[in-house]
Length: 261
Image 1 (cartoon, rainbow, N blue to C red):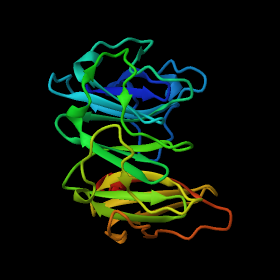
Image 2: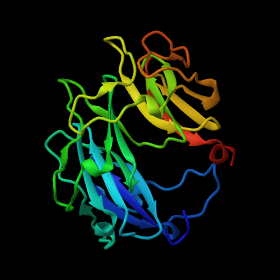
Image 3: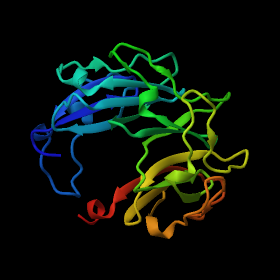
């Protein structure tokens, strides 16, 4: 981001806060930084779940938001062009729900992934543009005890990385995830045993780096080109060996250039 860009900070409670990049101190890569609560008036239990850098509030762009319970909402980016120090409501959430994914879109497809290994892909136009106060519409129909874990804006130039709590993962081509109508149960994104959950899904390039974190606080860094590209309806390959009683709890993709810096 450039110094005068806006950072749109979305919280798990569906609120939006603004920051300007120049408000953040310029420090070294290894510096700790400052807690986000020093900059934003967050409530108790409120955390930032997505940050979008925006140079200008273009009329042709929209912001797509997805929640843990499978709701999706699309708002014109221009509706977020008037900053308020106290923040605003970006999406009204049902009790127990939380905002988990936010992305800028124009004409791309949207993909929603659930912890039971399901995915649904549909056109951005299947979700009408709504006002800020709207609740949204059903993006994916979830079974009992299922929840949405990741949202991806489809990019045919990238692969889809899926990672499971068992330490298994894989890359699959975007074309393997066929487009269906919004609101359905979707298709299998990854074959999972009954006690295993999908941890994360992300678009990835071969030269990206993947950081894996376990419940035992172990961090493992691997290159994306070390992860096999195989079919969508498979369980994947072992990315790391877990200790007894340990699970993989998080996976994050970074560009290799960003990590190298």
